[in-house]
Length: 517
Figure (spheres, rainbow, N blue to C red):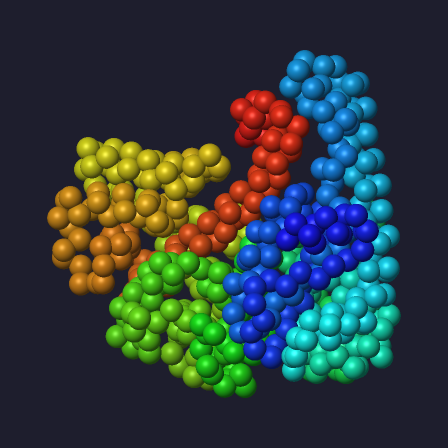
């Protein structure tokens, strides 16, 4: 790893890094984006992560993408000194202007290298495979941000080399390239598809210093000729930094290796499968859910006697299909061939528990809707308690929420309900109920589920077992959504920590400043 780091920085020429040992006849080539590695250790950690992708030989293109912290010391220190050291507003403004100007110049200088890297990529890949005697039957190209741009431009710049290589899929994650690119030409040499992973939460691309409408935020327009060659995958919860840490999830969700590992082996022509996979508010979250969260959801769904799954199921697609069925009327499900979307289910639950909104419910953000449902259920449960028990209950909810959310606690007492149903917080809620001997009267699986079921027991708004289950499912999905947002925030804060450590800034003061903002 040290050799590649030194060689690339000495020559400023891209170099290939083999991640782990060659395995199988499928090669995945990964291309990183702008400002990916600040030091050799980060490069090593990234290569080690790629080596864990099973079923393929994993190769990375390490190219001179720079890092915006490289020469930012002077202007950034001016800003920090003015903000934290009592400097005047004029000095802070000048320092901030220098920092912004530096960032724009640095990004543009890196962006200017893209065409050069792209021009030689495919011929150099062919030479590398020949020189290293690596024989493969399929090659998947995977690029993030400017790395996605490099791959697209490489296919356009080298059509002959592209046809000679056994190229299969092109997976683009948070791509920094325009939606109006010539996708017919890009997809022409591919045996597989162009898979575009995009997210409206990718604010890094929204702030990119140009007016380009990037595929990382928007779907590629699909014409009839492109329908079989281009697939748009909306990862609604992803920000720009989420793709590499959750690469295994992306590989699995997009079925890059055509194995459907961990997912239901079903007829892809099934209307239920298509409907579930297209439910962007539910399926991507279940794919990213932790094992314990999937276990909790499976145990919950399996309580309905008509459920077609049992408590051992962990496949996101099976769970999504079953939950959608429970959200709809049985006869309507049969007529349309599938259940209802998660959004419809959550809106129905909100109406039944009596949540009121000033605006039309269709316009309410899903996370806010889930939080309102949780608040309503908590309040209804608290009404059943004595004053003494209610005080204890509120204290345990507070403690559980603080333990779960840590430094980034965004909720007050009224908004802790969803959080109180996950991880260590759920244990606190369960303990409170079990100490009062109530959970033993409920015939459900596990203490955690017993605690959750008490939240809806006796609520008059529910007219059948399906509503008891879909209501709690809204809480569980809300928990997963909140956790993922919290983790995305932690990733953004990692950048602040790097800046603090690089410039030896007063950590506690910086963190207080950010928290107060």
